[in-house]
Amino acid sequence: MKILLTGGAGYIGSHTAIALAAEGFEPVVLDNFSNSHPTVMERLTEVSGRSMLLEQGDVLDTDWLRQVLQRHHPVAVVHFAGDKAVGESVAQPLKYFHNNVGGAVSLMRAMVQATATGGGDRTPALVFSSSATVYGDPATVPITEDFPRSHTNPYGHTKLVIEDMLTAQCKADPTWRVGVLRYFNPVGAHPSGRMGEDPDGMPNNLMPFVTQVAVGRRPFLNVYGNDYPTPDGTGVRDYIHVMDLASGHVAAVRTLLQGSQGFTVNLGTGRGHSVLEVVRAFEQVSGRAVPYRIAPRRAGDVAQCWADPTLARTLLGWKARFGLEDMCADAWRWQNLNPQGYRSA
Ligand code: WQD
Image (cartoon, rainbow, N blue to C red):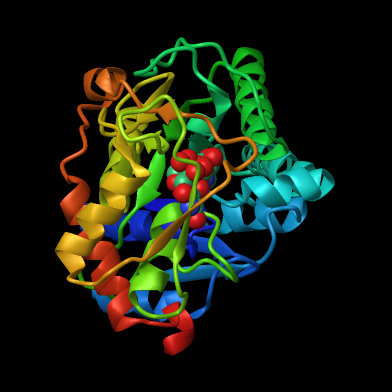
């Protein structure tokens, strides 16, 4: 059974492709490589032991997308493709609404067209890569799925709008099966060290910045504020291993294929860790120093954000297995073996 992964050459998408292949599915990677590297395809073949199908193109090209769907007849689509830098979204909101919201509209329209003119295929199940950022600044933690949604930046706004579009489409056509996954903070890498997170330019996120300091690409880490109302004053987040996130996608696909009409669940560990806890854990695991300086708070950051992952366990039979030490060890192995990321190839 084929599963189409839009943005499948990206960080979460590529690790999900590995997990789906391991479960006997046939991933079809769809990517325009605007924020990922073609070398990922070779690594997918190496790590999974099989060559993976690639459709190179842009999700905004609806007619091409319809042809891809009719060519492969996937039983499910996982929609990863989109831009994800919070800061960039504030500077370039139109890029984010065009690529993220426009891309989702294009995919959904292609799915309608493909089955309207196809040979009686059922509309594929759809899993959407959403984000905890739709909760804005939560009044309390841990966060459950019924918490109010809000947006504090255009990136988060696009995720919220796409969730609403999916809800409207499911109401209009009850044959649609949609699983919405709200990621907390994805970190880590495949344990082989051959795949991992490889941001372009200066990393926005904590872990890739830490690994680049440890490997010598950057002199020190800026800790954005140590005066938050948290145990050590630095921001607290629910870091989740990318392989746990990948297995969460497999569980979501299986649940939809086994008859679920759809769901919205948090994918997190249910535990929060501060910035300094991450730095200390990373130094212990890697044996490398991570010098840091306390810098001013970053605009838009919230003090604390972590998940109540109960619903994912109840509905999908999924729970995170890896802890912070595993996340640090796997992130370090990837960075140490690939100091320049996929460009080291
Ligand atoms: C984590 C903590 C920072 C960098 C965002 C998006 C979310 C998802 C993950 C896409 C915070 C601190 C960070 C640094 C630091 N993105 N930090 N120095 O902001 O929680 O979430 O990325 O899917 O949707 O909102 O993640 O890793 O940027 O920050 O001190 O150089 O680390 O202040 O407390 P964030 P992050």
